[in-house]
Image 1 (cartoon, rainbow, N blue to C red):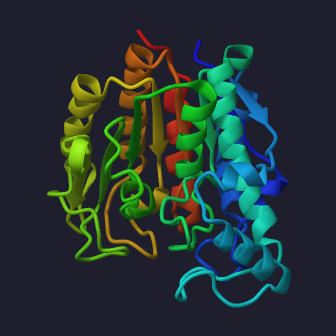
Image 2: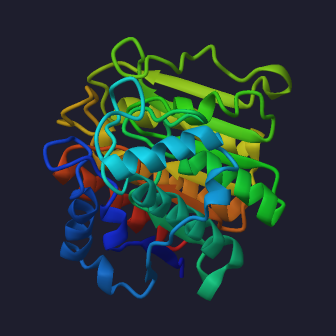
Image 3: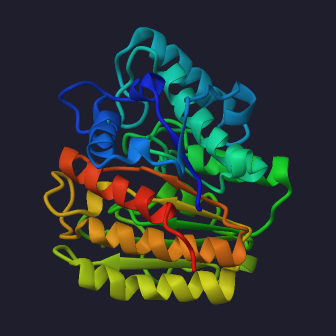
Length: 321
């Protein structure tokens, strides 16, 4: 039996930029509605955990203090932008972002402590992979992924981590922060940057210095299908299984790679998410004592959010042969 923790609660809905914005405050409920519709809330292998507020010292392990102070001030005023014009400030932005970070850290903590036998966890509003040390970017205020990687190493003493990102957008805020880190193995499948923000993640980018060869960027052409994704993901499986052999697997499973997302151009279905999550689930049990944490990431079509993220959760509770 594969126990999985789901981080869910009203405090996670506070992270959003208003009703008319693509990243609105209802996204977590789009997931939860489908979650309940298919009865996952009644499955004994799933435990629901409340969101948690991050300590500021955890946020400062990754982000510059001046930027954190900027987020605090902007969150009190509630207008303007936290970057060059892509990520709006809103009232309570610091607290809302701290709940995202804290919930991701709680997911890691649950998995590492093996609380109640839980080896897998999912934070649907986590995965803010564009944020940099000193600025917001792409609707991402604090980079919960980068923070969690640093905290996992500090708190649990692990070294080798595999980060897999299947969001349609390249996870530039994670990639370039850890580009020279030889113990963070990154596999990022995304729409070709020639067609989509942030315009990065070329296939020749495989890490620098001692980390050369520990990174894998795979670009998909617009209109790519499940068949294209699965063919590409087989490279990821080989990379994780034969090269990374990690102590922890992190999956950023953005739903914006599915067909009819208003901001992207891929034609995947939830079957790609099911395939990726299932294969990584197996690899986690092979290499990482079952430890895998998933983070929702992007996705701006409410039906796709429900379909993609519940597919990930279902893959995590499947029995491993």
